[in-house]
Image (cartoon, rainbow over all chains, first blue to last red; front, side, top):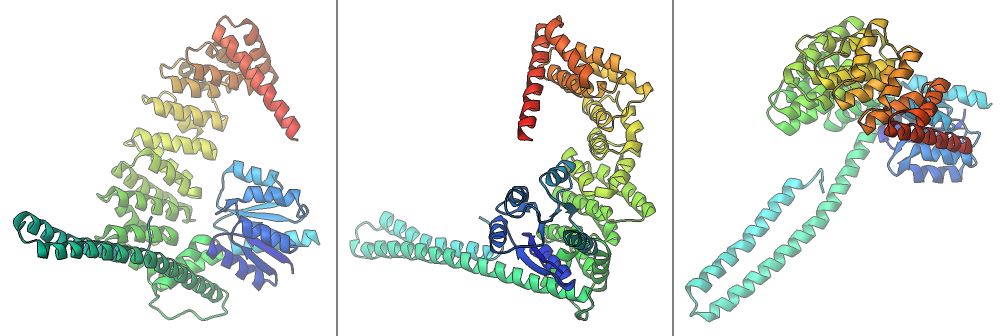
Length: 122
Length: 400
């Protein structure tokens, strides 16, 4: 069981994440944009972050860079994005994302990946 | 400013206010022009006109404010209702709640479609089953065949989210609809539906029918490119269907060849090579781009690339320089050296970039060209390309 921050502006995707992860016993907080995400990161510590890239008030890649340069350097970050272009995936991974899942996504696969990273983190 | 709710009411109110204002003003004009001797009544009419105009403005302003508030509240209420239905459908999928009794309301259907769009795998299949059980697809297909354009377009968007293979005949019929807006929306919906078809045989069959509809509708290049992007994993089937047709217009071939290069579809390498000598220069350029991206240049195709380096069309020569890098090393160096002296700045730049991409031999050739190329512009371009490369290497090293 872990504490997970999902930064995702799509209400439906946010609800799916909440449902899938909470059903599996994890504690989930959903932030709707970059500012909300920064606030959540400042308020608490998380075992894993699920991050969308297209956010209404900025780019998830910029937030990822901030996370890596700030206090969340060792927190696993799983990017969940509709952008499938090779260069975006490569850029995300180079900026420090630990995993990349494209939308539409399989909830089972996402849960398996999340739990793998939580296990690796110990 | 566009609002989802209240547009019709706003338009009607504005029409009424303007009419109410216009009546006394017309009357006033009539009186002033026709009865200049009776001044008593004229004062009251003038006052009445001004008061009506002021009242009209107050009413319009009040409505505008109310309109914004109501619209925002209704949008929030809609989002809340959708969210509640999404949560409910998730509980149904998890077996924690029984399926609701039909027929479904608009929010329930919207939430089901949103979920279907968001997920894939077993849950997506189960959502498709639910859509079928509640007859959602049939209803949407009926609306696509209707007369009101806004409803038709909305139904096509919903069908794109539903991705129900059984809707393909309706979607393909809509691709050849006389209305271009319907054609484009239907093509997008069909591409997304095709992307979800997993059985290879069915996918090939539907791709062929889809290609036939696209050709019949003579959709423009940009739409075909978008369709090939949306088709996702079904794109190879669609590319095959397009390239297999003899009646296919040049923009379709271009879009298919671009998809071949972008997606790295090696099995279509021969199809790209076969179009290196196509009569349409845009197709020749697309074939060269595909060949360069695939890094495949069979021996029999080398002559076509050599010919493209001397093509009369500038942009064909630009793409030919990238493909020329695939020629045997000595031949590539010689061909690109020659293109450094091309009359076009863009071709010279492309040749210099291609040489810079050929490793040490290419860089050595660029250095040689910077010193000894007989063309002054070629020497300048080679030197510039070397300077740019050095700057980039330094910037990358510093960033690391």
